Image: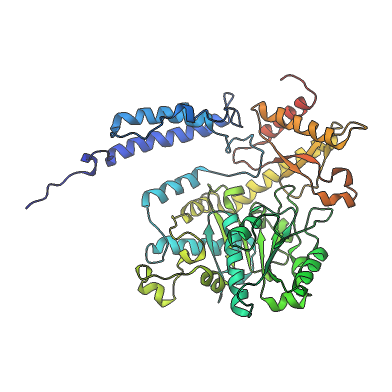
Length: 520
């Protein structure tokens, strides 16, 4: 019996190629127009001004049953413009200074589009050789460009890199690899007490990874050691050494130290070389096979610039490192680069090989199967967007981009220091400026914090920019910054794709106006 042939568009609900082209052109126009709107006089408030439930109240309670077809697309585009965009906080705005940036760029967006269009799953080399091999080559490109140790290259005996979703996932992957290595190199018995170490200023993902791995029950669990920081906000290496030695003497197993290059609160830089040296002086650490991981999620991009070569100090003595091009390197979310010099421990910690995944290439050992490098099995073709960014901008273009943000941050830092109404609260190490209104004479700490929050809230409510808070290190109570210890301050991170000097100048004027209660 002959089978009748149908264009896929003839089937109920399906879209033809021609219809896809038309809708795709319209969607690209919408995206380009959206970006242009973010840098125009009629730009929307940077921080969403809609209350909880605003969008929920405007969405149907149930999913559509009948196909909407071509006519429905006019309604979809209308809903994007009338419902979705008004309910966004605009991370791509040139006036987004809160948190760290979540960079995007047109080349990266095109890479995302192609990844979705090709629709491959790169879980195994065999399921998409191009996805695997392009990723491998890109990680080697970036390792060389950043001056990372050769032991992180895929061509080394036991190193290599992959793209994770976020730095949080990289921390978890490192922790799982660390546990596997320690358990396979030492006789620890059935229930060892593992301990993870990081600074009080480290990202919350370190504690979360320990919780997910079953090492800790919560962020306050004693199996997560929060190491005090020094006056510059960096980890106190002697304090770390004391904690590790204390735990080892008590029969606990030091498992992993997570150092941070560019802490979230004030972009403090842990001295990885000094951390490694302090640990190498402890026999129990050296015998344990424990792991050093470096979280450079935001600041790692600066390793592309030779003037930041000091960030690489000690990396030849660590087991893994990660950084996010989606933060400050023009690559759309999500894209975290993760390298290790011990891929065997990483792969062994997460490798399961059921019959349906067996194939000749994997059995040969000649290929990377990236599904073994992280928790998810499936993985999309994320390397495309980074590839497009590198080829479009080049390393020199990316360096110029980073250096311009550093220049703008230095301008803001100077304005803060020169204005008697404000107080600088931390040394600027890169593109983050931390400040607060200068305390009134005789004001207590609580009143000053309330005043800082009032200024921050007023700035954010204006809609003209968006900044975020930080609680300064409590350990500063024993330093020359004792009056700032545990106090609230304002973070202004300069790194959005569209940010230029005139945006920064206007933002500072808005902050000064809000501080003096002047009307715009």
